[in-house]
Image (cartoon, rainbow, N blue to C red; front, side):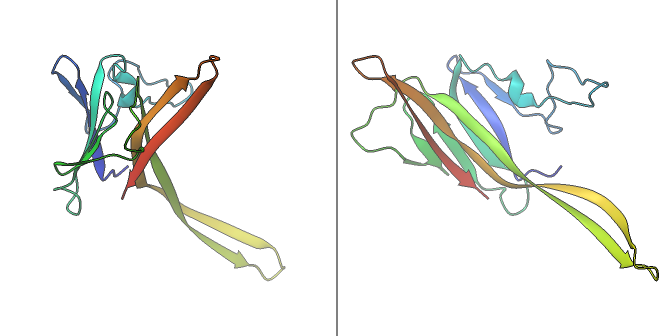
Length: 157
């Protein structure tokens, strides 16, 4: 499946973990019984995560760099920082939010036969990443210990 953006996890200790080209997990094996291949996203150590980067990996996006700092809640695009939360708001304990919106396409030919029945011929199924979303979620507690969750994400095409 073609992706326009790959990710890099930047850890608090200064190390990095980059999404493999095939996107497959290196710690969780393929399950032949269910035909399930876990994503490399599962391999990220979220407790040590400081910043999450997206970088363009095709001709249209190759110069694009996006990031979210999970300590400050500040986003970045090609070196320019910006916030999506109110200016006086101070994020705490941010957790990463990341997902890809997948589009499926398939050519289908349907024919009405002489007897009135319908015959259908299905072509190859194609999968595309339509958009990539990333950001952070945090939960704060008010004085009576009631949780309030907020999510701040942006989508890149």
